[in-house]
Image 1 (cartoon, rainbow, N blue to C red):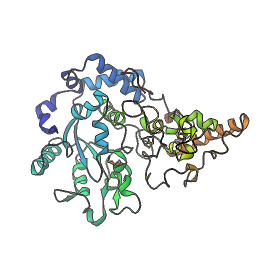
Image 2 (image 1 turned 135 degrees about the horizontal axis):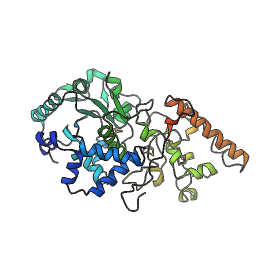
Image 3 (image 1 turned 90 degrees about the vertical axis):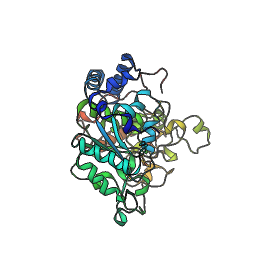
Length: 390
Ligand code: SF4
Ligand code: SF3
Ligand code: F3S
């Protein structure tokens, strides 16, 4: 794997903009503008956002980034690096100045340590700290040590000079599988270990690559962190339930459900609610941006959502059991009642569902029902820069 620290020489790092980096790699102006338009749509900015995004990427210097890996499986880096969108994958490698990341550095040992120290010294107050993984706090942090120091120690040192912190993935945002009961390492999310820093929680196990790119583009464009929900997630990507953007939703509303994974209803693509789909309680962009360049997402491949962008999703009740049995859930009427009658009963049920969902959502993001900030234009279902799409 390339040594990113060597690839981006300090002089180059100081002077080039994202646009210059793109054109130097053969990206045409047309493709650049398509990418800016797509990103601004993903961020909910609409057509007028294109000019803002394009101007920022053309004129602003790349942000120095330190990407730390703690207790995790590297799926978030993989998600970003394996993006099928040519520019999204490049965002990580070229469009930000990725000065330190254990996963991609060829250097190791003292050389790698020196690289980290140089970066946080030279760019004090300017660099972005990206964190992947949870912080084990049991046994004085002995479960995750790098160079003889605990993850918590390193995190606090590196975060001290950071401009902002991005927590990538469920591990960093809420502990993911390591924090599942009985949480043997006493794993904590980044926000419980760090105080006094703006932290953006980019949720998912892993997050969608285009969402990760969108958060970085937002930071580059506006020089401030995006608006967050009560769980620290950027509202532009996490303000809608998977259920609200799911293409199987008409089946849910009509009471057409899969009863077992190999039944005729599964072949027909009916709703997976009775198979334990957690789409009704999960906020993410899977139904709109989707995965693998907009090709598909878990529900489209026949598996219910397991709620991977929510806190403690491993412990939120057993998978494959109907959501209505989960603590705190109960807004949806039981699936058995939906679709029993056509007309007033169904319409009333759906209306109640919509109203209650709206109230719960507004409560969660700290707004009053009816406030405009909860929604905004939906993100595109397809990447308009590509032919075909989702
Ligand atoms: Fe889609 Fe799941 Fe909602 Fe059914 S319950 S509409 S499969 S998100
Ligand atoms: Fe974690 Fe769930 Fe993979 Fe990103 S998010 S490392 S496990
Ligand atoms: Fe995760 Fe559910 Fe999307 S499991 S990938 S939030 S459909």
